[in-house]
Length: 253
Image (cartoon, rainbow, N blue to C red):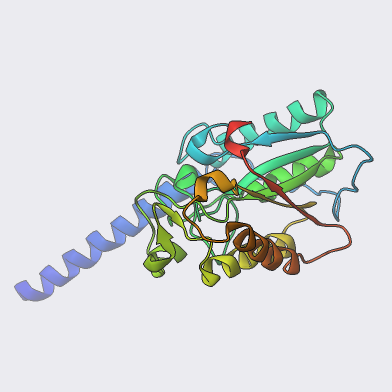
């Protein structure tokens, strides 16, 4: 056998072993090898709104409440979300405000935003687990609504994925945040709300981080927020059963 051909075969074998090792790592992290897969059915539709809203917040930015650390296994993530749903049910909450898009990134299956580094350890990395989808299903069983919290202007300070709207449109970023006066930023909120309300049985979307005090240098800021909210409202999939709200200081709750 010629030395060149032997070299090519050796490289091919090493590449194959690397692929097998990577696949094993992903399967191990997703519990497909170590965990028993038990099919489970959940109630369909959106949980009806109660006469009085009693909501608890789940902050994901900075791993404040969930997940406790980046790059956890699916089993660990499920356990933490189960604890959140159980806590809400035990203490009489009928809604959970889950921070689904904290920094122009996603803790759900998104075709608009990259996966959050708070979930995967690196923004844009493959997310084998869908936290929002799992939480919605578990809360359905307990008769609890889930609202997705979206910060339309926050952006990660570093480590942006190539697929991030902020990376694709650097002109949108001003003073470390997405510029509220930029039409593309306003429309982006609508795109995020559209996929969230179309793909998940959530009761609505809450826009966070819209405190005017943070954007003193933005001319006619109130009009910018109104346009952002307008795109978001127009993008609600089920306007009869899904609502849009605003929350200025979500991170401080």
